[in-house]
Image (cartoon, rainbow, N blue to C red):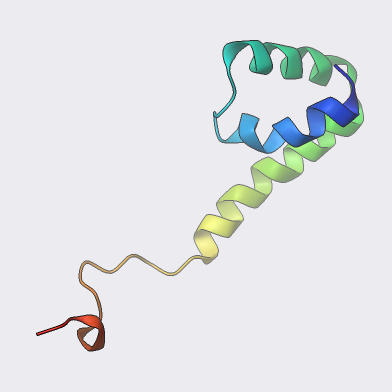
Amino acid sequence: MNCHEAEPLLSALVDNALTKAERHAVEQHLRECAACRQTLMIFRAFTPAMLAALPQRQDRAPRHLIQP
């Protein structure tokens, strides 16, 4: 696997959305590629930051959205 093939899979790796074969191939590539390891670190830092920026879930819909 090369960087061109690995880069689109890095986000899915963070999300645990790869098949075993894909995960194995990406992890092998990451052992040898500092650039992709750096990109993976950015994705791993970005995901919690994005989740923290989302509004908190409300238990109920706002009143103006509830039909009588």
